[in-house]
Amino acid sequence: MRKVNKRIFLGSRECLRQGWFMLRQGKDLPAHVIPASQMFFIQEGEMIGTLAQKRYPEGVLAQGKTFRETLGLTTKFLRMRKTVFEALLIKDKLICRPDVLVPEECDTHVTPNSFQDDLNMYRLPNGQRRKAWRVVEVKSGLARKKDAYIDDLSYTVMVAQRYGLAISGASLVALDPSHTASAPHGESDNVFAEVDLSEEVYDRLLSFASFLPKVENMVSNPLVMPEPTVQPACKNCEFFNTRCVGAGVEHSVFTLPRVQGRDLEAFEARGVRDIRDVTDSQELSTPMQRLVWAAVTGEAYVPPAGEPAFQRVGELLISEKLGERLQAVRAPYFCLDFETMQLGLPTFAGLRPFEMAVVQYSLHVLAMGKDPGEAEHYHYLGDPAEDCREKVAQSLVDAFRSASNTYGAPGSVLVWNARFERGRLREMGDAFPNLRDDLLEMEGSIVDLYEVCKGAMYHPAMGGSYSLKNVCAALFPDAEADLGYQDGDVQDGSTAMTILGKRARGQLPDEEWRDIAPELERYCGLDTFNLLRIRVELETAVARRSRS
Image (cartoon, rainbow, N blue to C red; front, side, top):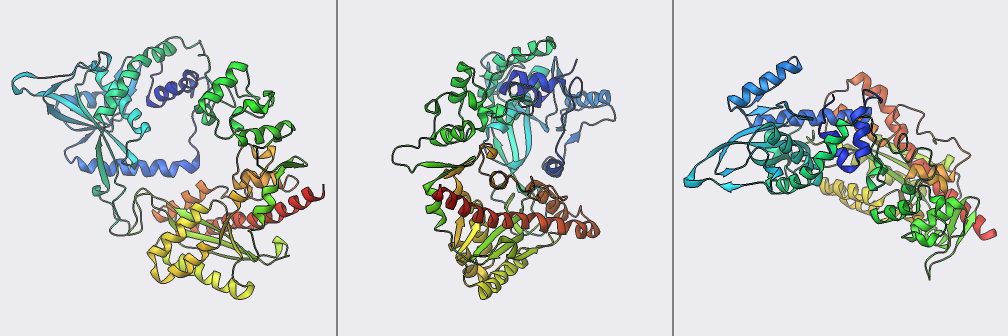
């Protein structure tokens, strides 16, 4: 009988049916597959875990060549009261591998199953001390009190207590957000911070105790599929659209923006799983939800009182706001996009954990009245094997100066998600004061095409999202379906970030880097070229609206 691990238990807490599916992966269902773009970050997490072990120089690793040998080492090291890494704890249907178990003595008695009996904690008399263990969870994220971390720790403590260990406390060891890398490729255990989460964990254990019998019943009755409960977690569930209630639903209720638990409860009560089953837009919570519903169903959209009316141009719904917003977009158009590297253990001096480093930009420039195909393209890709940030920033400033000399000062610097580009420009300005004025001048001309589109147009093909790719798919339905994104080896931002991270870590040899670099440049250039296409197409759609 398969054991319940942390992933299955916590997945079951979100939805028992999800846990039931997870339990069968690799047996009745295909094994859980980790996307290739995530493997680099998992490997970085393993590297951070290994580095964290240096905080405990007396620690020993409970890892044998076989499962049985690992169990034996765990038992041996626990009896010896060693600090143990990756102990293998199994009790009944549960299994876990604590990152670190640290032997402690405490003046508080905690029974092995205390979480089942309101913790049953009390002070030992006469200054007595009890042998116990502190559970330490190592995370490759930042050291903050996050629910996900508390859940992880709570599960491990629950299994450890059931195994028979007295637990004196629970801690999170994660990356210190204030730590700054002192040298390139510098790695030190000083990068960590420890947060005591004992109180939060003990509170969470009470709810785990009441839920555990449901998981045990699920494991004991493997042929009984639990009833589904549609909830916000379904939106990102790997089974929802393939094996659960979302299968075959073309326009799921999760297409609606910001759908909340109360919305889902109301939909379930009426048996609504496809938004086309909603009969009255007033049943929806927000104007954006009603706009999506109208676009999908073909019904009229009635905006809130005082808001401009929408008009249908084909399947596209357009508001008068769109034309007004486009008037703020002036030529010449400078379309800008960055690609960044974001590592938990930065390889560039002066960076904090997960601080973004711009290593690439793309800039398409187009004069008034010109076709996007006539745009001039400026671009630069730094080599993250070295600290290339200043070279990237200098190249960007030079490109803007050159383009301004040719086309005049930028009327608008077009971006998609201005918060991202503004943040990167400011960070580069802070890092390189000699370039600050030029970089801040660029920032002052930014116009966010995302904000131009948001709430002022909608098409069913957008699937409830105003992402750049979804808007492109809606505006150019007759063009190549993927607009070039699927043509090469770099098809999304996660893949680009993975390649850049590997190069920075020395995991991508020079020859492979030279082969993949043109693909990175192509991918980044697609985003800025499509910004131009969106600007032109929106103007055309507004003109069609005016004529109809």
